[in-house]
Length: 171
Image (cartoon, rainbow, N blue to C red; front, side):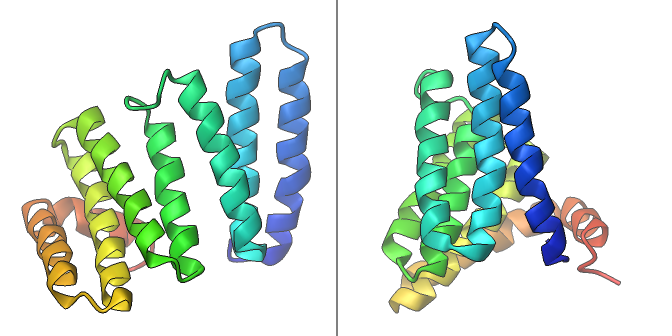
């Protein structure tokens, strides 16, 4: 969040979402909404208290794996692994970060095959994995991940250029 005041305004919104979902009779819909609201809260925690974010993402991961029958086919489960990778990296636990990013890539591959969107997301994970390996002092493995990232970037350069333009990375 560019404006930290906006982060704090999200907490009551996420809580309200959980409260509203609780009024519906569909237990599965409530649990999905609850998990989504907790995921948003974990994102806020990530900026404030990374350890709390890890605990919250792990709770969401457990909920989503249960909701999606193990989670091997769920982009929402994959997202939890990616966010856990970010958190572990922020904490300097690069081995755990690598394991989380690796699980993310594994699920994304099963889920999407090799379509453009999946490949772009996987390339970003490879970039994060490269950074972890650099911090761990494993230059060879870092180079392997960088090569994978660059291979995907070269195949889908127009997708990356458009995405980065939308996100303000390219002027």
